[in-house]
Amino acid sequence: MSFVNTLKQWDEAVACFERGDSAASLGTFLDIQEKNSKIVFNVGCLHLINKNLDAAEKAFDGSIGKDGHLAVAFFQRALTFYKKERYEESLADFQHAFRELRGNQLIDYKPLGLRYKLYACEVLHNMALAHAQLGQWEKAKETILTALNLRTESKLSHIDRGLECILKQKVFEPVEVPAKVLFKPNKNYVAELEKKDYLGKAKVVSSIVFQDDFSGFAPLQPQDISVAPHRALEEGEPHTVLFEFVPETSDELAVVPGNIVFVLNSGEDNWASVIFNERRGLVPYNFLERLEITLSSKQDQSCQIEESSLCVVKVHFTYTITMCMVPGLPYTTTLEKISNKLGLPAMAITLSYAHLDSGKIVIDEDTRMEDVWSCVHNGRLTLWCDLKEGMSEQLQSQNQLMALHSYESSTPEDLEFHQGDTILLLCKVNEDWFEGQCNGKVGIFPASFVEEVPMKDK
Image 1 (cartoon, helix red, strand yellow):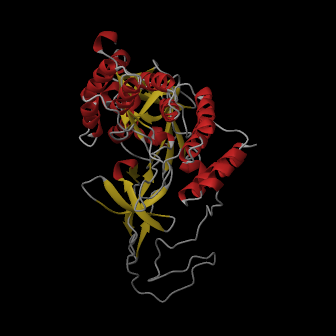
Image 2 (tube, rainbow, N blue to C red):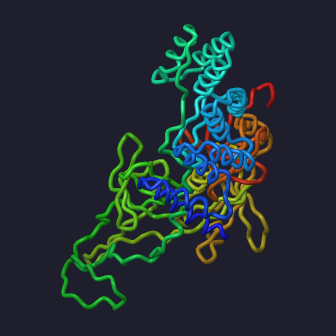
């Protein structure tokens, strides 16, 4: 079975579950021939909802077999053992789930498609309950006190009630994963399954004809116009999307790098109201980069908007980036744009370009930028970027991160790495996501999966 068919059935099974048809959802999941750990986990959750504990245990065994570091699968299998009154096996799985947290207070599975946070304190809460069922009250008390110390949110008050019960040597209810959550397939992959009209409907942006709505291919017809009024971009300012954004609410809009959106307004909360493909929604403003548009007036008393002929600039660094620029920019502006894109200080890098006669030439304050921009061919320019002498070690020591957990990419933009890998931080996309370089690759990754390398190790 192809990946596309697996994705279609996975998405269909989740849709059935969300409509309340658990039987159809389970049947669709079971029909998938090539099941990954997430799909098998979903099968186990559905069996657990149906109270088919033997089938649930078998499914969670399969999920763990495919991904031995999936802490939430150990947590669910532990709950299955607990419901079957196999408390020793339940305790062992809760302990394994806690080890897979690797010292973190929680694991947020949202980036992987599961809207659930596995808290270390709740794993310890259930571990204490297993000790209590085995009559090990001292260990239960010790474990629940550790859970209290790791509690991060006041809403986790059930841990306090657990302590009260243990002090009275009474058992209590375990914490369970909500029955309504399942691993969902990546939204971007699912969106690619649908047929798309990439050309869309033509739309007049600028015209010398007042109220011109014609968008066909016929030539402009002569008009008796003495003065044609200026028609500006009434649909907002054009921006390029820099990073992928996956919406979480109906008010937000899905975009991917390279999309051109029109910003209607932006507020101090970093959200921008945009239009894309005739749809309107919210996108983080720091995910966008403004396109340069210039206005020129004509002496014959008519005005029109002219979009600057943008040039695609490719910059070879330790990795390669591309960006749009207006040909003819001065040296300082060009250097600033490239340094911002790389996330490096302008004073730390040196630019150069290739000339047919002279080979590679360094660009500095004394360089005639006309010579640089004259190398544009077919709307493209290639530059090279190098760190100045002595800056490489200094910058790397300031931007090195250590991977706390392995991260498996789910989209082409993700950066995949393993626990213990060193990652060079390129920029912070937002509070939750970073962009970095590891093993010769560049991509984005969750900030919670890394930590700064201590100074003594740099």
